[in-house]
Length: 95
Image 1 (cartoon, rainbow, N blue to C red):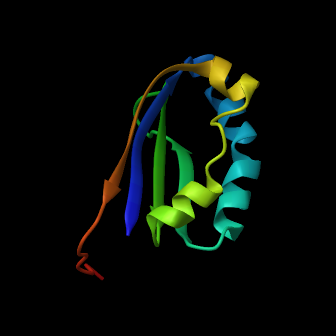
Image 2 (tube, rainbow, N blue to C red):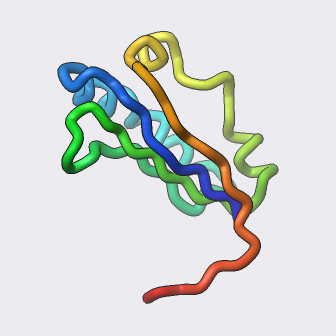
């Protein structure tokens, strides 16, 4: 399993528009074979922070989905980003 997780920082005044612009990519990702979970959401405390969380069944699934990154409007809104990809060898259910 692959997990992609981290956060993006945007100006607080543009966060709502940034998130609205992410709707189509979230819908597309969730329809992609191998996508187990994909979300882009507002942080509950920091008005400039956007949380990214993805789970994929394999590295090939992630790579088949990835394009060249955010489009011009999304990329322009990003002040900074800290997102990483993790390879998970084992998982234990907590529910």
